[in-house]
Image 1 (cartoon, helix red, strand yellow):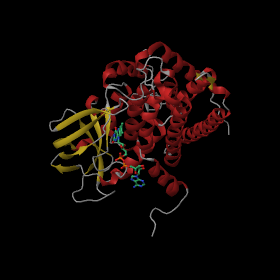
Image 2: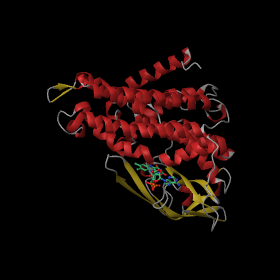
Image 3: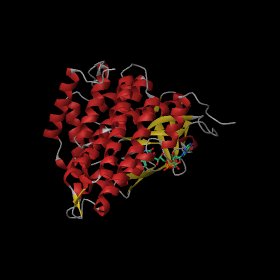
Image 4: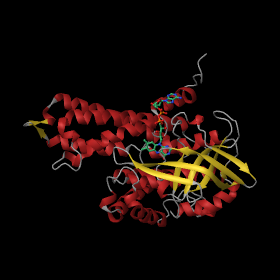
Length: 397
Ligand SMILES: Cc1cc2nc3c(=O)[nH]c(=O)nc-3n(C[C@H](O)[C@H](O)[C@H](O)COP(=O)(O)OP(=O)(O)OC[C@H]3O[C@@H](n4cnc5c(N)ncnc54)[C@H](O)[C@@H]3O)c2cc1C
């Protein structure tokens, strides 16, 4: 197997790298999540990416794309470089638009939805929030209660969602709802697109301990045109699994882990604590070598997922679950290891004068908890690997 990129792919990588250097302001670098303070600035950059044709490289020409068959790699390289350039927030916006919503619409959306939404997605002229989790339904997403009952030509939506990132700054909510009255678990679910300025929606933003913003969304008798149904009514579970696989595969990028690790190794080379050079400590060196090996394994897993995603009509569900589980475990272990090696200095945030590596590890430590739960927890992803990858039974008797 040859993991090298082609000369064209390498040239594209260099072009993206130069773009990041020239066009992404420093204030957007080092931002892990999308933050409402920066939305306008961030969208300006995303629109420049769109103008280059990079968002639509893989999309058919009839919806405003470039129709390039090799484009899954283009998408991968773009997101990879954005992470490497520490522009993770911008990468996330591109991921929402193109990789999760756009690609799922292309796969299961009606012709009307494709015509209405895909050109706007490729021009970065629209923003979406992913509206799945509820106060009592996180990983166990099949237990959601939000209902959307058809009345004439409209769904009437009632329910509450929790932790809906960007709900306050988006145009549409990509929503998982229960369209069949009295249905349970995986049955009777659907995906619909709800306009955020519809009467009956209340959005309550709040901030998590690591500065990440997210929202509660309350929907009371919200009316949604039935044309905004995505895919087939009642097939929401299958559609959700497709969208989540795309999310795990693209959002969980290894540069997001290896970038901070590389900066840490760089720092350890010369750092001293209490007059002792950290790099002289054999235990520290062993720990770093071990993390390095895990990192290489993770990068390979992601490349495997990326190369399989090149196949048309193939969604790398098991590969994405493996890559996501590995990254989550690694993020947690790496943050723990870094704080251990840095002792009290690792707890200094970027606001503390003289904080090593700009307080990176205090932030990484807070972020690592989210890595464990976002896009399905570790156990849930292991279930996918056991059932779909290893062919083990779904339930025990
Ligand atoms: C900062 C942030 C941003 C978020 N953004 C969004 C967003 O934009 N949109 C959105 O819809 N959601 C979002 N979420 C919600 C996130 O996806 C959920 O927090 C996540 O699904 C976990 O749910 P929970 O917190 O209720 O944990 P729980 O579901 O209670 O899980 C706790 C633990 O139990 C395990 N577990 C639970 N059920 C099972 C099971 N059936 N089998 C095996 N193990 C299981 C999990 O793996 C986990 O380890 C966000 C969360 C955070 C913190």
